[in-house]
Each structure stands twice: as C-alpha cells, then as structure tokens.
Length: 291
Length: 290
Picture (cartoon, chains in turn yellow, green):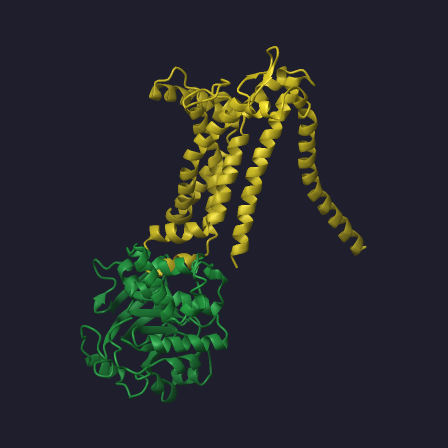
C-alpha cells in the first residue's frame, strides 16, 4: 500500500516536471510550424537583414532589421540605466542600509513587479513622454529613450532581488576577513563581496535583460511605433514584441504576414532562450567553484 | 621581515626563565625593536575592560599586559569570553550590534577607543586569523595582493614582491608559486590557513590575533602551523585563543585562563600549567570541567 502511494507520488512529480519541458518544446514547435512558411516567400537573410518592413504592400517586404534594432536600442538603453542602478540598490540593501530601511526598500522594489505593465506604459506615455520631449526639445516624446526608462524601471525588481540574494549569500567570514585587515566598508564591498557574488550578479543582469527583451505592452505604448532604423535613442522605434502584438489582429491566418509574425516570435524566443541559458550556466559555474 | 631578530637563534625565547607579569609592570616601553630577553615590552595593555552584549556582561574587569614578540595563549571553556576579548583588541566587536564597552585597551600605548582612533588604522597594525580558514574566493595572488591594495600600494612590482615575501614567510612559496592564479578555495585547509596568515604580512602588522587557528585542521597540519607560529614570534607578537590546552602549553610563553568572562589567572605558561594559583585554573587544566 505504502509502496503504491510512493510510486503514485513519484509519477505525479515526474509528470509535472515533464509537463513544463513539454510546454516549452510544444510552443517552440508551434512557432516553427506557423513561422517557417515565411521562408518560402522571403529568404532568411532578407528576413533578418532586410531594411524594410512593409507587410501589407504589394509585394510585401518582411525585413525585420528595423525591429531588431528597435528592440536592441530599447534594451541597451534600459540596461545602461538599470544595471548600475539595480546593482547599486542591491548593494545598498544588502550591505549598507540599516535593517529597517533595507526591509522597506526590498518590499518597495518588489512592489514594482506588481504594477501591471499597461499601467507603466500609461505612465510613460502620459507623464514621462512630455518631459522627455521638453527636455530634449524633440518633436515627439514617444522615443526609444522613453521606453528604455520605463523598461529599466520594470527590470529593477528582477535585477535587484536576484543580485541582493547573491550579495547576501556571500559568507560573512569574507567580509570579516577584509575588515580585519583594515579594509573600509567600501573596499570590502568592492574588492571582496562583489567579486564573490559575481556569478549571481551576472545572472541577475541577464534575467533583467531577458525581462526587457520580452516586454511588450509598455514599449508599445511608449516608443512611438515607427518602423525605422534608429540612429539615436531619441527617435521613435518599434520593437519585435510590439510588432507582433500590434499586427497580429489584422492578419489573415496562413498569410505570409501571419507567418512573418511567427517568425519574429521564433527570433524572440531564441534570443530570450540564449539569455536565460547563459544566465543559468553562469549561476552554475559559480556554484561549482565554491566549496 | 623585521629587523630585530638579527643573530637570535630560533626558539631562544622559550629558553631562559622569563620575568613574571608583575615584573612586566615595571617594564618600560622602548621604541624600536629590542631583544626581548633584555627588555620585555608590552604591546597590548588591557585596563579594567568590560564588555556587554546588550544586558549580558561578556567580559568582567579584564586587566592584562601582552608581551611583545612572544606568544600569549588564552584558554578557557566555550563561552568564557576568550574570543570576545581577542576581538576587542582589533575592535571587531564593533560590528556586533548592541555591544558596549567600558575601560581601556592600549595598543602600542595608544587607547584604541580614544578620540581620533580609527579601526582601519588599528586593524592594519593588528592582524587577525580566524577559526575557519577564510581566504577570499579569489586567486591565491589576489588574496595576497588584497592587503597592499587596500592600503594604497598599486605598483605591480611592489605587489609581486609583497606576495612572494608573504608566501615565503609562511613556507607556501615553493608549493604555490606555480599556482598563484588558482582559486584559494582549491587549496588544502592547512594551506588556506597559512595563506590567511600570509596575506596579513604585507600590511606589516605588529600583533597577530589568532582565534583557534587550528581547530579546523588535522593534527599534522596543526603541528606545522604551530611550528610556523614559533618561527613568527621572532618578528610578531601573537595572541592565540585556543581550547586545546596541549596547544597552549606547547606554543605559548604566557597563558591566561578565562572563566565566565573573568580573567582568572595570567602568567608564564609553565607556571600556569604546573603551579596554578587559582583552584579553578587547576580544575580546568586537570580536566575536571570544560
């Protein structure tokens, strides 16, 4: 009897484990089946490096370079802001802030994750965009930079909480040893604690960036939606995610346009997959090094 | 490393009968290194020192003088305050919330709690070795370079020289000179503990505090670290906390016995272990408790 229930439970657990893998595989297969038909119309190079995204003109053009670069611009902009700020916040919470303040800050940063992205997009559109327009005296405030600002905010919870955990997990003895040698608090943080927490911090950065790449609603609302190769962050752009979300409703199922949107999905999927796998490898390499 | 040991054979200090603590009271502070046999010099003086963790009094009116260029052992059962006393000398207890102290500790004649006294400067002078070897999770080289770097030495040649000199002093250079880039965590525990001692040396401390430095090591490694301590006392003053009484009797010149926050007895090691004055010391060293 006991043996039987053991086996059932084991089977159930194994099943749940496989289900999640199965979902990933199935989603990828689905993207492939729906997307691959595009390549009968457009070559892979024309797709990835084509400069024109004109899905409904005749003949349609499915070059996603502007979208790729739009995503890249927004992601790079967001990372440049979020990475230093996020790591700084994590260090402050883990090492510097008094306990009470650290607790409040931690909860506060994690609350950002509770804000629906459409609300963040709304705030960006109505409050931040006019400020950006005024400040840089631009014709429009909805730019890659505006989107980056909002995305930086959105990636903070992931980045800060993972980095903070990593810093917190550095054994106290390292810090003690550093201080006992006459290091100042900053020297101990900079020379010992941060290097010791590096794998976790890298993972935090990667996962934060992964969050930024995949974000849709906020960027769609804040970046202006112009399909153009950006030369600065202060121009309107359109990301891959925003393109899929905005155009999926108007396509005819099975049309090249429809296939092209799925092909963009494949590209996005691969990018986030690479980022997450890299983060994972980095975390595990860190674990193997420590005793 | 230092200048004062010229012509002095190793182990010379264990030989001739040394003056007792009372005699030390009269000893003058001499500037510059002086052979110990002629003028015992106090490096640390603890005066009426009390320490509280919140409402709990961990150290009760401690008075002691630690002799320069000698090994002083502090023994006593767990929780008697010996580590607390040790960590008071380099103000590591500052890191513990709720700690209050009263009384004075003088290192080199200067009150470490006095106005303008900086823990950073104090800890440069007073190095600490911990119970569990705690090399930084960096390479051997980076561990050794940490001290010079935090104290303002950045020139490569100087750092390289300091690394080599430090490792040589703890007899690790030959073992590790080809592995300077290896992670310090890949070393054996004994090598790690030696490295932890070595990385203090480039900072040029005068006093080394060792908090049960051998408790994580096997007997052979313990013996070798003890030998190292014997060698190092020619250039450094060492205070070692241990609950291993054999270790105290083997390595130290002076021994203090602590119980429940009090320093019960302090004197020459031989005296403490053969003719203890206090019956509590006798009970402890004969194994009646602890």
